[in-house]
Amino acid sequence: MPVVNSWNEWDTLREVVVGSATGACFEPTEPGNRPQVRGPGDLPFPTGPKSDEAVHRADEQLEGLAAVLAGQGVTVRRPEPYDFSRSLRTPGFEVENQYCAVCPRDVMITLGNEILEATMSRRARYFEYEPYRKLVYGYWEADQRVGWTVAPKPTMADSMYRQDFWEWPLEERHARMHDSEFCVTQDEVVFDAADMSRFGRDILVQESMTTNRAGIRWLKRTLEPKGFRVHPVHFPLDYFPSHIDCTFVPLRPGLILTNPDRPIRDAERRMFTENDWKLVDAPEPVLTNDDMPPYCQSSKWLSMNVLSVSPDTVICEEQEKPLQDLMYSLGFEVLTVPFRDVFEYGGSLHCATWDIRRDGTREDYFP
Ligand code: DAV
Image (tube, rainbow, N blue to C red):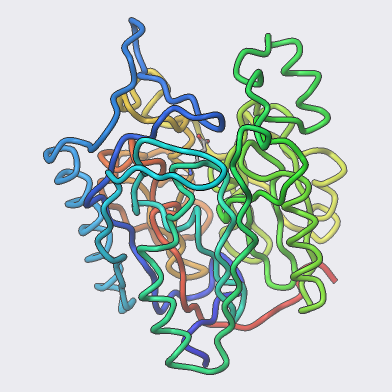
């Protein structure tokens, strides 16, 4: 098997990259992002490096995940250290600091025997591929069957963003939502890797705040000649969509964990129902939106951001018991790890990983 080989989200995992909080900074306010402190009051969102204590707690939980994976026989790799406190100045923009290497899933994706680096959609994440480059070179040098594609970098200049997006009243948001217009315009190719979900030959791509239609066109034209089929998908009740892995999570052939607050468009559901796939809603998360860590910008649905170790074993956050019970009832073995201290870095178990190698090959699940 090539050293890079992963065609879906569930086949038996052999090698994975687990993110790291070392050097992490607060995400800066910029045209594509308006981070807010949760809870009462209107506290300004901090800038610059996260506290040593917050980094230490997150790194402990990331190491815990790495240890559980190693215990399952999975080879675990980690990103290179990177100084995220450095500001950036490019011809298109300036930003005061960068973000972190906690969520490789957002930037990097394995599509079969090929590694693809996303364009990204936010300034602070422009160079986020760098902590992974040493790994990429390692895989690329080790096996000539490994492909490596880097998507075109957008300018991330002011003209790439629709700055009034953040102030749209709810009604306008609702109307624009149906045209899939968010904070990024349609003029440049823009996508985050985490808006994709892999089903063998078929790849879903969510149109979102972090992936636009030009991005999806680029993915279609790049991937379809290689034998993939790219399907844009939409979840019309999610007004701030970003990344598909808290919304629509395949667990094994024929089974998808779905978000009860964010049903898929009817026309897009048919691809699954007509091929006898079962869509099962995740239970209400234990951690409510009000209890999320103050600097966390994600929703309570991080609960369903699970990582599959195989088609019958899944890793869940330790405290999400109702989800674990659902998994047992669906016939899964469930492993758990504490992970809440990672949430303020943008994700949970699926976000914080990037699969390099899983068993299996390219199947056609939607003939
Ligand atoms: O549902 O809040 C979180 C995505 C994390 N990368 C959500 C999406």
